[in-house]
Image 1 (spheres, rainbow, N blue to C red):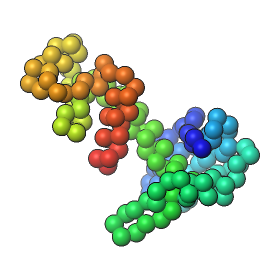
Image 2: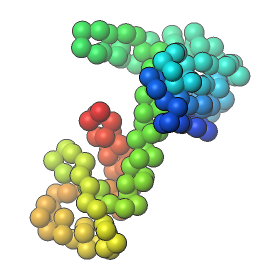
Image 3: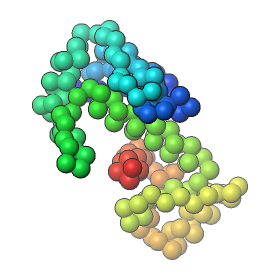
Length: 158
């Protein structure tokens, strides 16, 4: 089951205790739910529009995803946790795209580092970084796999 968010509208200004957003949830290429949260601490709301029910998705996620653990507390993976993870990935992805416009982003020693361009050409900054650390992976000029790795590192640092 491939679950993805599309047409995400997120409002940081309205997010108080939870993320304020609206989105479409697509499962295996089909629109399944319209999702929303008002950002005031309540649960997500799902309006079913496809053939999947929330119980079907929760059962599949419970069987196929590891439980979420926070200190001594663990809970089964369900649609709300999946959407939360996808929304965090979407949000960090947008932040990374903004950073790529004004910074040289590298992966060095398992960390994401950023070097401000300050109107200097990317190639000059990249050359200087590679001179001091030849193993540095430049995210700006890399493909989707490196971008996904950088996003995973950003999410794991949260």
